[in-house]
Image 1 (spheres, helix red, strand yellow):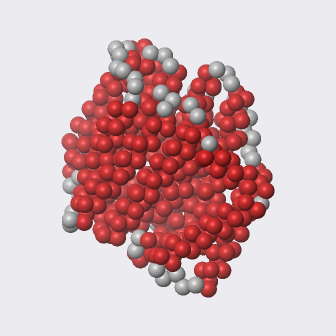
Image 2 (tube, rainbow, N blue to C red):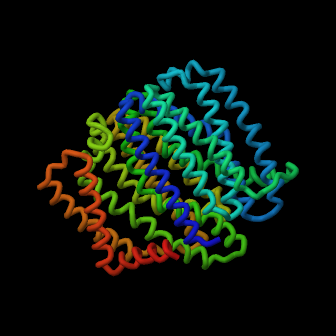
Image 3 (cartoon, one colour):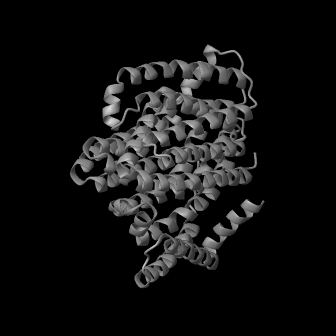
Length: 471
């Protein structure tokens, strides 16, 4: 597998699909308002949290076991059978408790939640199979198609006057396309299910599920608790700020997705030095986007939320700054976390996940109740810092983590220079329309790239990314 080429393909697909999703969320937020968007985000939060025990880490286990190359057909068949058995009680539970679920969501959406759960778990399995086949680059197509169909179908429904259900119909349509495309791309034929492979999958998944819980808690726990203590409108404001920050994770998450099966394969061959070299090479490119994004948001947070999504969303300007700072940490964490799982130590990733998950829940309950949306953002950041430190510590027990401080320092210096430029522009120019805002952001990117090329350490990062992209 060509790591550079796969990373670029995955990044390009995710960049395009995230741009489409971002434009879709912008349209939906403007058309429906913060209350309806809050209902949709609570729907997604419940879908994500229910999916954790319904999957029980089986999807991650499939990627791990398929990448090891032993009896892939039996592994896949066993995984499908296990997922069916796991899904049944949760589908039944949603149906039985649909009145309570509808009250929490603020709309009659429980039965759509059942459909979404089944489609999501089926579609995600096909992507995990492709990754386990070391064909990560080929996941780009179905991932892109899912977002394109989701936004396109949702936009049609909303444009024709539908409420939040229109977005959910788009979400379901996207999952159907992703499932069909991923299944068609996979080359693993079904074999006979086996108790042996069921135990093998559970041996890995029982730890991977804890990491998944940590990830979903990190993504959705603050939203779920905001939904309990505050209003659907508050959920909408907070999640819009969160969605803006996720754009900067595109490249680092693409790198992490690509290196997992490769680290797994090298670990099976005891190629520790190759893993250490790969980690060092991956960290600075992962930060190349996140660092300047944080500096830019510090200057332009109110303008971004107000002009892109609407005036009611400017209430989340400080939330946006806090969460964007956290994305700098997450850009490194995602590399370390996937590597720790790749060397077959999901137990340690699970331990870190449990500690940070408990901390996240406790801090959110206290801080959301006391400080509202700002408390939720601070709780998320503090718990994730602890999670990242623990992942780095556990991974360092097996491989040496060489942090490229000079290259990171170069990116910080270039970002600081860009921030000064943006501050001067923001102080002298009235940013009153979206085209002016986009122009200023574009100029900021050019200034950052210029300083990144001037400063030697960051120039190395820039040229490495360029060479890999064209290579």
